[in-house]
Image: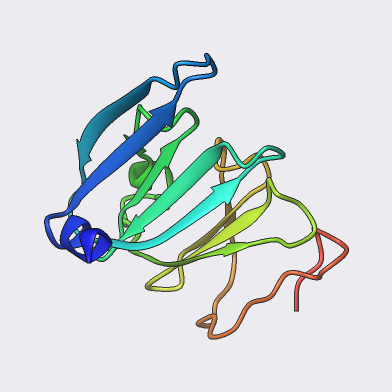
Length: 138
């Protein structure tokens, strides 16, 4: 119920536990444009988090405290992207595809730091990464 209420208010709370024995907890509130639609962890230690909102925006953090709206990095010319879904590669924790509306899709191989546009003229209904080879897709 707390998670539902959190998503309803379009706020994202991050909890951090320090490494000392006193277990300090720090809470920081970050407001998003809308409720959370999807959240996925990336990188070899799963420390990079991407959040997709209901309005199709994409937020990224590497430390859990500082969230950055990276949606504008995923633009092709002047056409803005609306993120439909995030697809993570099971073979590589750094590789993902962002499927957007209007046939605009992007691939990242460094946990969302940089992006490359996927040239696809048709709508992508189903996309799956290969289980063992991160550069292969079905």
